[in-house]
Image (tube, rainbow, N blue to C red; front, side):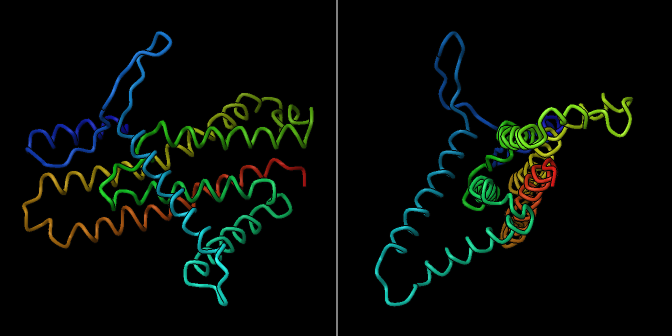
Amino acid sequence: MGNGAAGLAGRLLLDGGGDVDFFIHSYLEFPLFGTTVSINTTMVCTVIVCLAILVLCLILRHEIMKDYDEPNTLQNIAELLVEFLDGMVEGSMGKHAPKYRNYVEMLMIFIIFSNTSGLFGLRPPTADFATTFAMALITFFLIEYAWIRYNGIAFVKDLFEPFPIFFPVNVISEFATPVSMSLRLFGNVLSGTIMLGLWYALMPWFAKIGIPAALHGYFDLFSGAIQTYVFGMLTMTFVTDKYPD
């Protein structure tokens, strides 16, 4: 459905002679092990987002390592962010938080940076299903690991609860988790990307003054933050639910 909407919107863009293109483009292709590898928009934007996070981390580390008499503004912001994320993970996962804190917090930081990258003219990496599905797949493996590691062979019994007839439904439910998580994030971010692309391409010039700021504020900041929170909370909830206590 997402690809169909993108295709329809793309045709409108082309027909309307718009100046914004939100499609995923291939910049470089080369053969590798008998197949063709493509360097596309998502890969480039993902690298940029990761580099931005890395640079920010290095700047914060540099400031924290300085011997100040009192913490400066950057230190206070970094500590506030870490304490906020730590509190969120500990509040959701309890005693299991230390094992997953680094993954969940870095996951949420990457998603919020990706979701808001549209403010800087990038195509959000999370507007590509390959990106969101890859993240959901990692979460899925953590869920299954927690389930098997701490329940042992009893995890098979859970698939037959509450009645054996529910076995197929329970199996489908497990494998549907990464699909539903990835589609939720992908769909929300892609819809915002399409809406902004159509606005820039089809509206007259005077409608592109001021109004896009409000649209970016909603689609990139507000909706981006909400989807980051939802994905993070689902990750913590699904993993924690697999523990016996």
